[in-house]
Length: 315
Image (cartoon, rainbow, N blue to C red):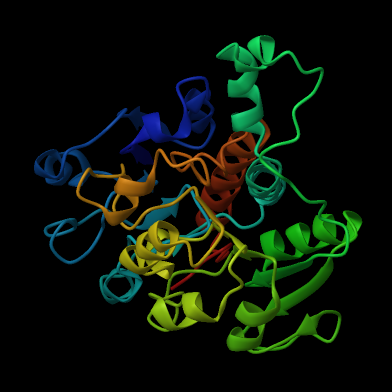
C-alpha cells in the first residue's frame, strides 16, 4: 500500500513520519503546491493531508486512491461528498488535541485578562526600573473568579475549557445545537449578553459561518474577552476588527483565520499589534503530545481500513 503525505511540514519537522512505513510504503512531502498535487497522488492508495484542498478539481483523475486520512479533527478543506461518490473514504482524528487546544485557549485568555505582555514590556523596556516605584498596578486587571465564561461548542475541547473555567471559579454557560443537561445551555444571544469571556470551539459548517458577526458583537459587554479556537470564518473578521478598533469589545484573541497564513489584507491584520489583541499562528492543536497522538491515530485508521473497518470515517 502506497501512502503519500502531502504537507508533512505542517505536522512539525520533529515528528517521525517514518512510522507510517509500518503500514505501507510512505512517500513524504514537506509541502505540495496545487500544481504538483495531481502527479503526486495519481498512483497512491492513501493520502495523508492537513490543509490542502481536496475536491473534484484537485482529485481529478485519481484511480488507485482508497483512503484520505486528515491529520486533524476538522475536514472543511475536503469535499467529503465528492470523495464518497468516487469510492474514497475520508477519516479524521478525534480528541487528539483536546488538552493542547484547551491549554492554549486558557493561556491566551489569561494573557489578555492580566496584560502580561504589557507588564513584561514595562520591565524589558526599563520603564519599571526608571519609575522609582517598587511595583506597578496599571493597566488594571481583574480576577476570573466570579466571572461568566461562555463556551460556544461543547465538543471535547469545549468541555475541557469549561472544566478549567469552572476550576478558576467562573460561572460557565454554553451554547450548542443540542443542549446538554450537564451544562447551563443558553441561546447565542444570551451567551453574548452575559459572558465576560467567550471562547469559540465549534466546527465550521454552513450554519456556523460568520456565527459571530456584527449583531452578536453588539450584544457583548464592553470589556468582554473574545477568543476563537475554532475556524477563522466562524467569525466575521471585519466586524471583529471594527469592534476592537471602536472599543465596543475589550479584547480579542485567535489562533485561526479565514485564510492561512494570515494575509496582510485580512481585516484582523490591522489590529494584530494592539495590546488587547493576541494572535497565534494556528498552533493551539500542536503540542508534541498531540501531534504524536495524531500520527498514531492515523496509523490506526489505516490499519482499520485494511481490515474493512470504518474507523473515524466522516463520509
